[in-house]
Amino acid sequence: MARPRRPVAPRGPRERRGPRGAAPACVPGRDRGPPATIDEINAGQVEERRDAAVAQLIDEICAGHAAALGALGQVDDATLATTMPQGFRPGEAAVADMIVRGGPGHDGGHVDQIEAALA
Image (cartoon, rainbow, N blue to C red; front, side, top):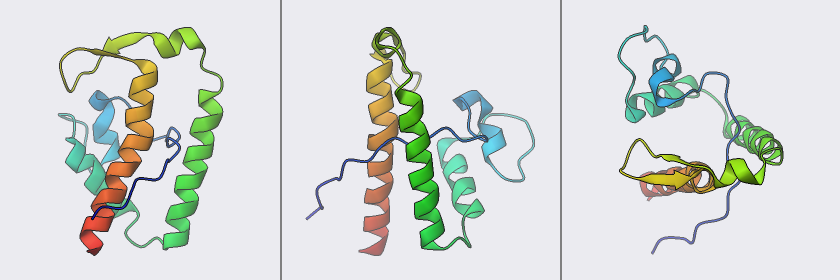
């Protein structure tokens, strides 16, 4: 039985992150070229942290969440209500909805992956 998801604050922006088209910078050792897939990006992020202690990883997540929450407090309601193409699926979504999916939803998906790997 899956454990209920905890609410998780969205992760803050990272210097090496960018829109999907800028993804190659996220993969260590990868030259500029075609954009990386999300799996390549995730593998690069894992590789960068392979030797990090669990406490360091948790500190990084907490710092990112704090930065994101601080930045979100400065986004006006009109921007949050703006709709834009989702890119990875048909249709548009409000910026606020994308933030929820990209923050808590994204983190929750990775927590599920970790729990499945440990089961």
